[in-house]
Length: 301
Image (cartoon, rainbow, N blue to C red; front, side, top):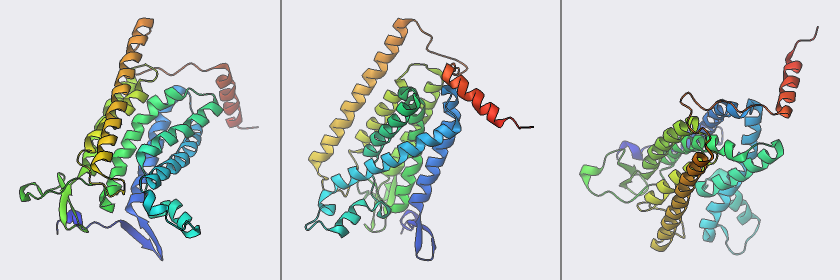
């Protein structure tokens, strides 16, 4: 057996509690995303406390959406007859695994939108700086699929091609398969690097958001060709439908990116900042809040 087939999904166990590698990796990805957003959002005058509040609003909603998407795509597994209490618990049992990122991100954005409306912040500026960080988190999170031995591609029968990272040995299948989790991880990492650089220097509101949508849907649509899903709705027609949907969305996002740049250029505003986009000026309300925070930090005599 190849070493990639000997990995285990459980990192360690405390009594009857099993701690999975997937959970550890996802948690680390989230913590890194929070750290980077704290750094990036300083130009938007969003404090570290507010970044934490933003994540507390976006992540739970995103997880709920990701679970809903997974359950719907595997409806015959969860919506059994009779649909009793045990079936309901099985449906919401996130701890058993089963999340769909393509549903999780839109729901997470909805949570961020609610937070931004409450805090009177520009949601597009938040998404422009934050969504490229989501790509990094997705890149890291895909390694959770490696430990779960899932999200692989087509079978690799040629012995000359049975090496990692091109192929991964799946123990329960007893064969090598294309390591699509690794392909997606690397492509998302590249996308993060490109968007991180562009959104640091290119001041076009909405560009980073459209850039994320373009990159991720292109990656997902392309890899859908070789994905070997176990979903009950998986068939050639459904795969083709997902591919077409992803490419259409990617095309629309690319059009949006080009349009935003053209409109900004026509307005005559500065777009490119060699040393990085300067922080936004504080509003009167933000100035008052900052003065209040500084006053609260001043030691009382």
